[in-house]
Amino acid sequence: MAAHKAKLVPGFTKQYGVTLLVNFETYGSILEARARENSLKRWRRAWKLKLIEDLNPDWRNLTDELNSLAG
Image 1 (tube, one colour):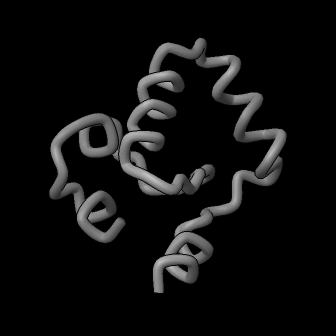
Image 2 (cartoon, helix red, strand yellow):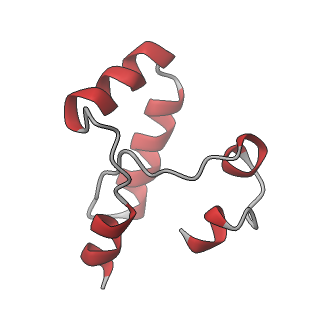
């Protein structure tokens, strides 16, 4: 997360200046996580917005919640 926020990782987050984590999902394996990521990348933008707003209607930054799961 720190590397993304510091714009050290090339890609979408760096290109568009994304600094908020508004949704995350946990999986038991990297294969499951990659499959879900690939699926989400094919979703329409409206579907992604609905996913976020259903789970996080205030668009809170969830970085601390993710960090607490990891640590």
